[in-house]
Image 1 (spheres, helix red, strand yellow):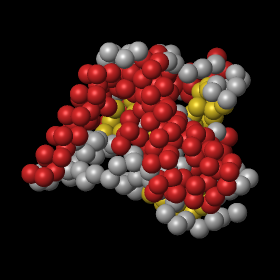
Image 2: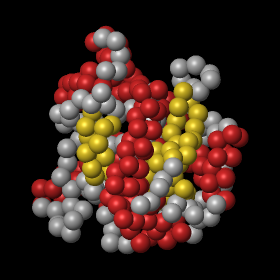
Image 3: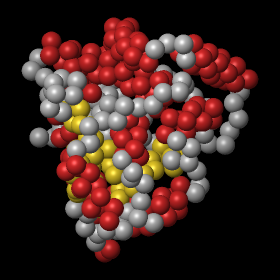
Image 4: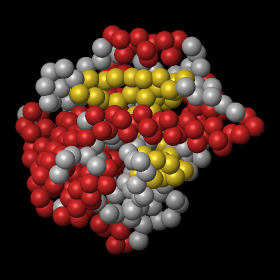
Length: 320
C-alpha cells in the first residue's frame, strides 16, 4: 500500500499544479489536517496492536457504509471473474476493505513513533535482488498495492538495499511531509516535480533500486493494454525508465506465505526487457504488457489484499 491509500476513498480537489487554494478550500483542508494531527496525538496513548485492530474494524465499517465503493469493488471482482459467485465475491471485497484498514493502522503506528514489522524475506529472494543490484545497471522494482507498500519498502531498507520509491505528492503539502516521515526523509521521488525524470535516471545509473507501484489508474502517461483480463490504462513510466537506462527490471510484491491465511512473504521475479531503438514505443508497450501480466498474476493469487474498491477499469472491455 501507498500512504495515499489512506485518502483513496475521498474525493478532494488539490492544488498540485501551481494554483492557490480558495478560502473555502483552505478552511476545509486546515480542518482535515487538524483532525488528522489531533488523531495522531491521541494514538500516541494507544497500544500499537490496538491501533492495527482498530484499523481493521474501520475497514470493515467502511465496507458496509461506503455503498459506492462497495459496488465498485463487487463490480470489479465480477468483471475480472474472481470468486465463484456473489457470496464469495462479497467475502473477498470485505477482506479487501479490512486489509486497507489494517494498512492504514500500520502507517498510523509508524507516525506515532513505531515502525513497520518487516515481512518474510527469504534468502532465495534476497539473492535475486543482490544479483540484480550487483550488475551495476540499477534496478526498476515494480510493485503493487498488495498489503502496505510502505511495509515492503521498509523491509528492503532494513535488509540493506539502496531503494527509493516513486510517489505522488499529496493535495496538501503537510500530508506530503507525513509521507516522508513514513518512508524516511529523502527516500521518495515525487513525480510532480520538474526534476523527477532526471533524478530517477541518476538514481538508476548509480546502480540503486527505484520502487514503482504501477497497478492503479494514475494521471501519468499510460497505454491501454490487458490488465486482469480487461483493457485498462496502465502507466508506462517503469518501462520507459528501464529501457532508457538499461536497468534490470524486477517485480516484487507480497504473496501468500506458508503460515496460513494471514501469512505473507516477499517474492521477486525478473522480467526481460529488450530495447529496440528503431521501434521504441513497441518496446515500451511490450515491457509494460509483461509487467501488467506479472502484477495481475500476483493480485489474483492474493485477491483479498488488493484495492478492488478503486475504480480501476471504468467500463473496460473483457479480453480473454
